[in-house]
Image 1 (tube, helix red, strand yellow):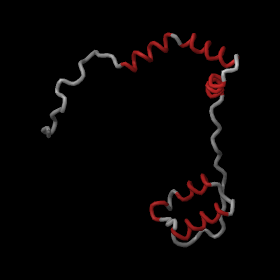
Image 2: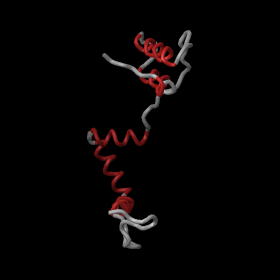
Image 3: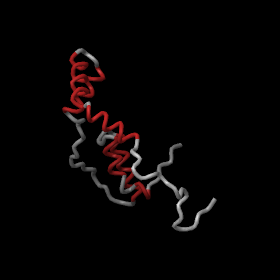
Length: 116
């Protein structure tokens, strides 16, 4: 069924003042935050690996890779040739796959790899 421009598909919509279930859940958790944290820490101290992981992730966020300058000799030519040199450098372990992916980003729209 098609609607006219500016006409809602659900004219009654959601009634005003109705609280979303997620909001209610969040309020319940927030009111018990201190007890929940104490419990997770106690579980971690008792040896619960998942609780340990949760605690450690909150204390120290995951390490992110640091970008360092990368040099590939003679990165000239067409986009296809540049892409081939980047992939070749990755194949020779001069670049990690993630570094190669970042470098291929600008080339990506014009570079097609055919696996055969």
